[in-house]
Image (cartoon, rainbow, N blue to C red; front, side):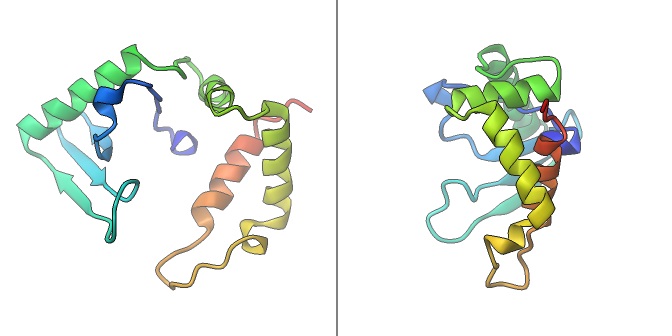
Amino acid sequence: MESLGITTWITENPDLAETAGFVLLPRQRASIASWVRAEAVSKLGLTTRPADLHTFADAIGHAAAHSVTSAGLARDRLIATADYLGLDWSWLTRRCHQLTLAGTRTLARPRSRLLGLEGPDAACRFVASHRTT
């Protein structure tokens, strides 16, 4: 998401654990994706209801205020995310660089023609672009 210019925050607040994944265009619309905790079928949606938009805006404000990955730059948020997940940043950027060169097709082959590997490839390129060595 950061590679697309979408700021992300990670919070340890358990009150937000059941919140569906979403992207908010403030006061206009929200895209909702529920595949993270979906039991069987993922659900995607779009809402323009003011009450829903207000709820999502409140969740964003709370997550941002209590984020364990708060930073002004995408690179710094990525470093904080890696630290939070216990990943060595140097190793992660090096591995993403290797995956960028080889492509994720060497690791995965989606069984559905509706799925692709462009997203993981783009994410690897973005993380690799922040390599320091």
